[in-house]
Image 1 (tube, helix red, strand yellow):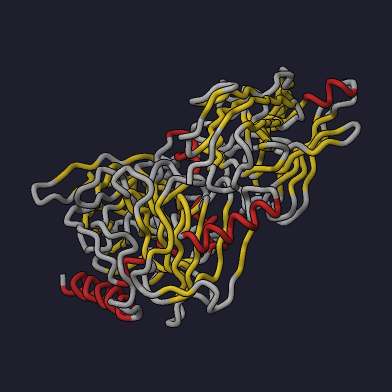
Image 2 (cartoon, rainbow, N blue to C red):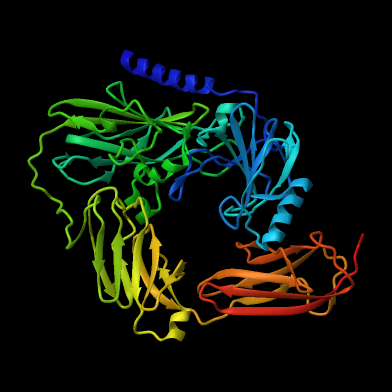
Length: 567
């Protein structure tokens, strides 16, 4: 008990020390409403850790966004997906704050960004960098308005704090950003894994879920397991904040073995380059099959995450014969609320015959080597270190589908998939594209590069791919107005576009022959032009839009509208 208490106190000291590294009252809430979160820092996302706080905006767009501290706008980026409209402020104390998914910027910044967009005739701006003094703001100044742009799943503000020099992202809660949280994390499941070739758990060599039961004090416990050699554990967990029903990420994981700290992990800070190792931190195969993320309390040898600390044997427990162990797995949120699982273990020699056959195929990839497999219909080429370890793959071609194993193995790099298209004529080739069939009812366009006799794509996902043909033009329809209509009171002009094949690639819209900026809400398929952008001359105007899909099918629409200028 004394040892257990010692290590709990040690963990507390580590957390307290981390908190003391960061200024507590320097940054303010970027919104003038109480903070409710829909996403937490370090939360598990698709192929990456969430790099900030997702702050709810009461289901609305257009809330004022405030500079969290004195500083200058050092960077702006507008893109269709990802962060959407994002603004970066560099502060004199060595940190940079990031505000993303914005609806628009304050007028002086908005005017500058639109001048770039009109000059490029493009919604996407690329990175726009600024020097100190160009767009300078004080703490509490309005810098933008909240929105739903980019890859946002609904109106909110994505807020980050980064180290300016290293670009590493830091949990904003360390800086005194207050979120009401009295709810302990939820534990939904427990798994155990054999992590050595001779390991047996309950006389079996396989990973499996261990039933857990909730105790009167809110903690959980599991029935005793027997094991030998090296084992590891993983938890299916999430956290909630007061006033919100979103399932968010946790802050820390610990494993105590007979009172000794074997494993510690927290989301204080990390770099963007290491975020991809999330796929080694979770049971990736289980996630791809069942859409449940089990977080491991042991470290894979190829995992380069910096979020692990105080590891003994990388969190893998070596079970000795006839020895007893009490393992506690402890999960905490940033506020210190915790939940735990108690697992008793008995060391037991096992003479069980190897009961699980090792999967072998004729398609072996040695991770450190470049590997290519050629077939009549297609080929696959894996650069060295595409895989984290050597793998045997199932690869075949059936009914027009290239089956590249199953998407249950995480990859570190893209590989190249090439299809033979010699049997198609030029007209057919024009309309063909490579599609991912993870969801067969909804094939997903893969960026397809075309040569005379081959088409190829690069991807980081194993699974099923095929060639599909798209002969249908995109659809275009006027929204809330019609041809030859007077629209003097309209502030915006809207058009709805869609494509049922390869998907929308680009569009170009003009009024009276001059390019106009139409912002695309890809979630709703709506393009919007703001009449404040340009002053129209006269009252009769010709609107024209041309929309193309990813194989070059093109549709266009022209319409006349009448509008008097409203001063």
